[in-house]
Length: 177
Image: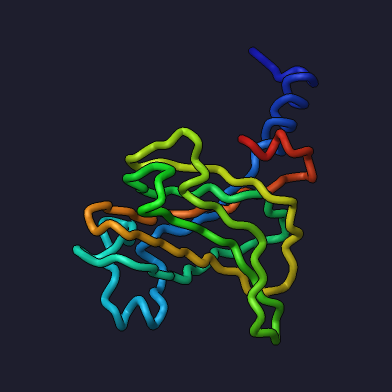
């Protein structure tokens, strides 16, 4: 019979605490702002959202943020399709925001832009953007998603966004997993 040794238990515990938890949202659950609706700029595609055929400009969505618990936010993982890579004709920006109870002032915790992916991927991709640790407090949290395109032939799409949580106040390298 194999019994775990103390060092195996310690290693398992360290790995469990080191990997940040995730909580995310898919594009199809987001709500477009009034201008996006009035100008009929978007449609859903699978579980994501994208520009309607032939439309260009700027579209904005607000997305629910699942229960935030009591951890510390340390980054964003953005899933998207940006057909011009780091080009300037299309991109997706996900911003993690909050407002204190009783306030109508939104505060940005951190943002992630598809054009920051130095791998210059032109198909479905993810980019990880880290920011200084944000301690979760009693407040309202949400995602603000902005997509822009100037070329109607580029099919830019927001697939989803996840915030990364620092578990146990471990140093920055641990939030990369």
